[in-house]
Image (tube, rainbow, N blue to C red):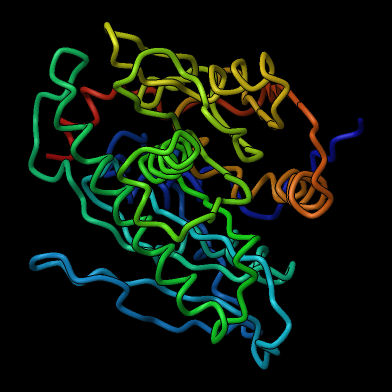
Length: 334
């Protein structure tokens, strides 16, 4: 296989600076690392963005943005990607400009994009560790529940939106990637929480950027065949593990472990490992790896190929700059 390594015009440090503003890390970069760069890409003038409220929970009115091509014929059904933003379950926005390049690419390649807000369950929470994982579990459960409600909203409005309900995918960055991987995992394992989804509904695929599955049910396994997954992850990520963290029956299974289980069971997956990089991979592929994303969508989703791809990429000129631990992250954000 030949993999294109075309790099887009965005400068690495600009993308990281934008991403770090989400996570509150811009202060960690030296003056030499943060020169001025032009603003990130805007949403294309060919795209229409509409905002809706999909659920009200307590004092939270949860919104979503629907991105479609202007003058789209809604009678011709299109696949849809539901996107969940990152921010450690503490901060972040569904319409942050760091995601615009990704959204533009998806919509211009015939996908409808639905970017959602969700409840931030770790806001104000401290001291999360493997010995005190309950707050993280609560945050993930809340986010997954919101993702299911957003999915229900999309399915309910599919006729008006022009969505093909057999081609609804999940995608997410960092905490959003944990959310979407866990949501698909719980649906495939018929967890009671997933019963709120329509009968017979299954996600067609998952695209995750530095994600993992959180489970309190022992080793990672699927009751039903999992959806194809494209997973980007830095091998040196200390915030969301690339491999796994296991503590009795509690497990946090990163991209490489998910791929390992998929390979053992002959399930489709595409693991793109950025060797030596850290949590910056939660954002960079949405600019630098659109070719690989298109390849996944074409072959795994449109053509239903059962491929298993394990790709390691190393750029000696690209240095990791986001190597904080999860504990250090939470101290900075709360």
